[in-house]
Length: 295
Image 1 (tube, rainbow, N blue to C red):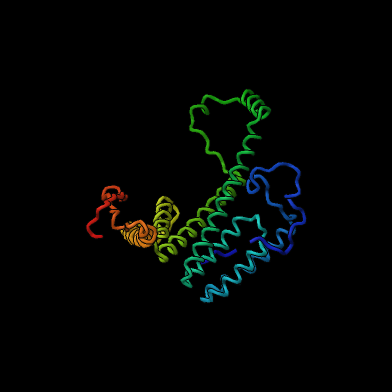
Image 2 (tube, rainbow, N blue to C red):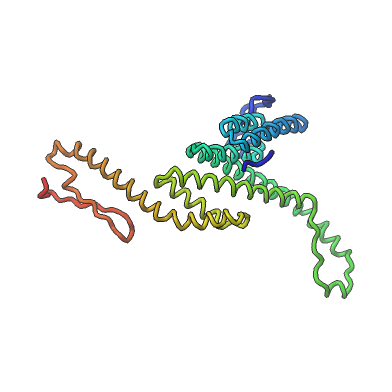
């Protein structure tokens, strides 16, 4: 079920980071996205959330095409740097595509959701590290030492168990944010894995298996999702192997046709070359036989 809550043209920032005279090594990492003033950001996000609520209602009514359009409207309004909010919308769009059996589109939008969450975690991790460096600067360390020297601890307190540190409001908000990110990541992974499995083919089935392996290592799945992941990890390996062998066979067939066309002027054919499979590694080697009797 979609969660309740593309860069937009509406309210587009006027400043252009590309006008900066400073050298930039990696634009995606070095240049922070331009932000709207707080009031404008809140207004845009509120409007985006209204569109999302309408899309959720359309999804619940099984009007999936209309829901996709409404989710995309919400994405176009949402400030482009709000990776979490956009990741939720992309994951919801993937859910709609799954319902419509549009598996390629589901894979694409689920991947966009996951990419947004990765950017968000990377940015927040960097921000947290920067904050810790400020706290652990020379002045802060000296102040901490002075305070420790002035603190008087009784012998009874020294022998008692350490007091449990109360979680600050900032820590609570950070923990909730991390839980939300993990929850949306699990949803997007489940949707991408299913789409890959349904679409089939060696690459997609291998990708689905990798997604399910990641999901199997998470601890926030529901009971039914856990059972589904375990079942898929049992079912996928033979499907992956069969798809690999089929595609390899097709590839060799095409290569033989191409090779025969190239070798014909020299009085040779692909019959002069034998492909031998190593059953232990699954790899192939080629042997040349100039006097092949089948010619």
